[in-house]
Image (tube, rainbow, N blue to C red):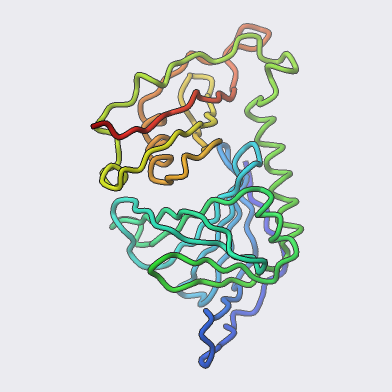
Length: 271
């Protein structure tokens, strides 16, 4: 696909607040970059210092019902994904959200991943700032600019993504035979994340899969989160690595790209 750049460049200056208890509001040092990828829509923007920026990302689910908000900091994060409580605030009150933190030795970055509903994300259109509140870590606040244009761009990208993967193919007749596969057999007891098991965290997730012409899982997105991000992340990891489908067929009998909604993946601690 391709990239689009939105909005004008903004000054790199920080709004200093040495006497304030609130987190300083980071200002953008570049444009929003809207990346039309084959398997997702992703918007990113750098903040803070140009030589060592903090990156804010926005990634909607392919059905547009939820959004992932990503904060990438230039320091090494945990090698294995960890989760904790947190919140997102667009200036209208805190939105409680579990956050996933990950990084590793190779990336040399620490990424916070929050998930909010589309209704919550709509607040960004008229909000001057967004503040992320990870439990046990300093708050991070970002100035928001050009958000109506960005959200519109993400919606346009989602429309293109849905057409590319023939999301309406079974309704409009372009898909004659749906993709077939069974994900239940790809999971084992060893896949249960240790942190979640120790916390006795359980839940049920559903995923939207992007199946290519060879039957491979080209993309995995959380449709119905379990409420435990590490379980959702592990679910996609296992499915992408092990699942194999018989690809969908078009009206001409040839393989065609398609989407598959999985049955619930249930995570349960036994004993």
